[in-house]
Length: 517
Image: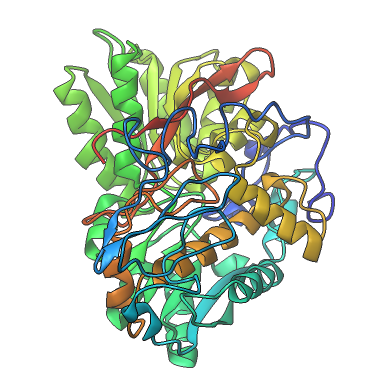
């Protein structure tokens, strides 16, 4: 890192990952960042919640035909989601848990009035374990000298945010007591997160763990074993099997699973005529996490087969496997592959390495990409002739586009203002990669807890989550929908691609509802 948290360079920094040994690139870990440049924000019109509570005509988290701010039903009454906008009012039926809020729309159970069940609410304090990264900036600085990427001080950020949530009623009248769990940058992989989970459970016996790391097998299995909730908000979600195995335990309230992401991206590509006719699609799969292979075998390949599109799958051992990447490029090029799809991790590193090597060989396929491929980082790091070939869709501005390509939503704006007031240096979402993530974890946890009138348990929280529909207004995504059977919550997307006017990856459509959620 070349500057303090909140520093923003004048433009994107070119990263030549191939010039560093793999041991240094490990610093990127599971959260490597959206890399952005400074710039004047574009107008907010058609990009943030308006006074009627819609985003480009779409109710956040709902369908385009739904009424603005309509919430899902909750036992005892309908959630009083209200109209999101300047009025900050909420209207709920008899029996609605909670009643008022200062943020626009009802937060169940966090108001001062409500049903008999709400008045009898168990208000015992609730303990949560909060993971935070130690040594992330130093590791990134060693791997990428001069990069504007910054993780921020996670412990300080989470403290400020949880204090603010408690001042506004906490988790449905329950004070949130954070217990901080450091995770060292050198030990932030699957086994390291599992150990951190086990230590947190033994030391603090928390109801929930707030994790800003990509959801991993070890973390999810630990949480399932001990019956501890995981509220995970990161730059990468888990796959469908991981969420199924940790059903009602591991939640990503503002993201979509990797399988849902590929279905969205490939389905839109087919509709737009972006899948090749008579030529195979190349699939690059990272082998050091079983979820990447599962997504390729269980979702990408069957989808392409159903579309009548041939494919060639190539594997790399890790995100820094340059030999495997070069072999894949040679195979794709010799097989007339002109469209490439990725099922990889490490926050954009494999994609950048692929594009750098492909450019050296004058191989320029089209790329279909989504949230997990971190197009913001890739767009600021890969060769220009390569990023011009990117198209896809995203639900997550932090991972999709530069900060000047999407102004803050109301929730994100409030989060950044709070952090800027209490800590300083939070000019936009890219000032710290973790600040808005902690806001989302704390806000979503408290929101759902507010719909639990009795004792707050992991099972009660999970049951309430599935009944809240589109009533939660997210910090880091366009809209959410909490429904039975899904532990991921993002419900809206925008298409993305190369923008000639900014020479960057930008959004190319208004916000739309994700189909079939």
